[in-house]
Image 1 (cartoon, rainbow, N blue to C red):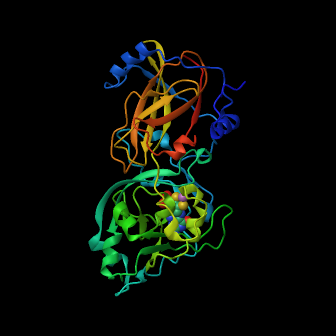
Image 2: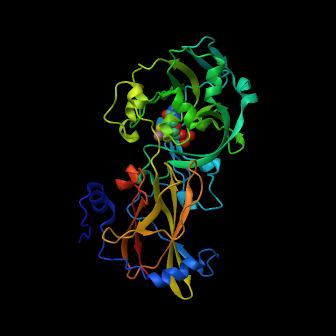
Image 3: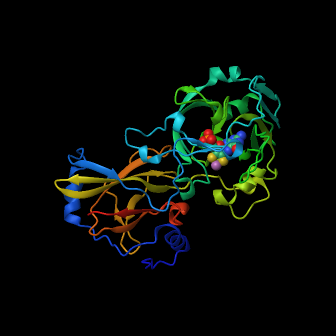
Length: 393
Ligand SMILES: Nc1nc2c(c(=O)[nH]1)N[C@H]1C(S)=C(S)[C@@H](COP(=O)(O)O)O[C@H]1N2
Ligand SMILES: [Mo]
């Protein structure tokens, strides 16, 4: 039977596809939960029995590289996130597209900074070095992150690099230079089945400055690994991964009339554009909306009772506003998560929710941000729903 009364297409689709919702309902047990919530500041004194498996998600291995070239992927195991483990170790950082096999590692690397500039320049990694500064922890999420990738196309790292605006000022942009086209090296001898080669994005100068975009040369305190774009990759904090060009080769000052790049067209839908705008200037900033999802559901025995603790993340958008609310069945009202996420917007923040379901069955974990509502299109469309099966209460 289906217990989904809601008209929303994505929800129906998800339920049909992956959860096959049972009859189980959660009634809360509020007093009980309040006393558990009081314990939340202390570590639980009970016994952690196991973590539940998210239902209807592929079983691809996490944390290891799959496929090669343009199709190469490594999914980060988000279930390892915790308040004291907010940064993804470099070897677990997600990978989308491996080092192009035509990249000649022996040839000295130069970044050409030219176009509408008085003093075009070519910069070597050694030229950048003296300007490299710590840039803090930033999250990157691939715009193609989804249930099919177990949401693992998302990671955080601590970056160092050179602000793009600094490199631009050095070449003395002309007044006609409204925008900047940043292009990476992308010559693969093998094409891809699901992605075009040629990674290039056009930004306005204002967008780069206000996002604090930088050319990253270090990641988690080490030289940037080749697979993540050595010697330099673009990081645009708060924007989707498709804008974070790896193996940057050229930074070109251009006018405001440039056609969108093939990369921009490929990612138009996934970055919430209206159709596929012809001009780069008609693209909206490819910023990550506020979103949240559970990453782990722990099953505990506390004072002889079975209890569940849902651990999740909240990321993207503006995190200074909005309360995170949760429900476990589409017919139930949302209620605030026990411990609201804390932290700034550049990384993910961790939240906890204590849960005592009344009956075993299949549950669907849904989140919303309200009070006030904030722009969270993917969350609202059901992209980050996760299902679990509870066998014991
Ligand atoms: N040169 C180049 N840069 C690229 C890509 C690419 O294919 N080629 N892929 C982009 C996409 S879609 C994403 S999500 C991120 C992934 O970065 P990572 O592999 O370091 O995690 O790199 C971006 N930069
Ligand atoms: Mo991506």
